[in-house]
Length: 363
Image (cartoon, rainbow, N blue to C red; front, top):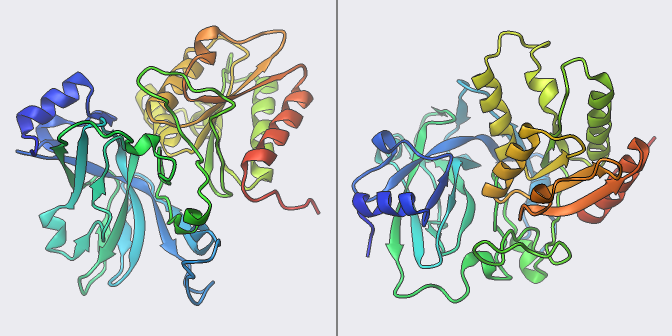
């Protein structure tokens, strides 16, 4: 049975279907579907770097694709015959007795834009953003923009809840995906579960059982408390944490480098919130310094949890860490340290374990 608009609203109200950020029902709810918006990140093939793709090779598709981030108000140009991967702005979470179907929008299809090739079914228990397989079938380049309505989802009930929903199945390769993830076809030979957020409703997974792996080029969000804009000592530690991540080929987002009022006095508090929130939602990991009580850090960790983004806690032995923060299910690693240098060394050791490609040797 396909859910009607009335049923979709009820499922959203009851939390059975979760969409984050919440949709505007006035513009995104149809008679039997919801529209999701286009995200900010795209991936395109680097055709000059390879002559073909071997589906039986363990070469990562990420190595032959280039990521492009589009700013607010700027277009992404789809050329005729070009395939690009994109992502929805919103993330979607399904219960174990409901599947979703992704469809394109008629208005875009009439221009030549399709949003998926074959990956139209989202199985019960899906959690994460949808990767879109965008293609321009028309004769002319087409400009598309982040936050425009790009696709729709319909929902169908199962005869009974799935015994092994998507989030629980060991072979699921895209659980919790947040970006425009490239194909992981090569992983089918030896599946590595890079992220599993839950064991069940309300359950807290064992940190020894939750496996996380990162790839070079993935984004890490650094969460931390600043007493003031002039807190140079704390800023220096965050920047050193960022440098350690960059040594392993990770892209780093440091909020104070992008939304500092000293650098950007024209930003409003709402603009700062939206920019940092979007950056976190587009990240594959949050590294949070929890040495000082902070609503910012707690809120960002909760946002990471709500969107299945794994988090690493850094805290000084002398300062400790609140029990509530340690209990957040998305926390996959706690790193306790005595000195800033000890923090950097232990973080580097952890990244050496979870980044699939080791850092380049220092020259």
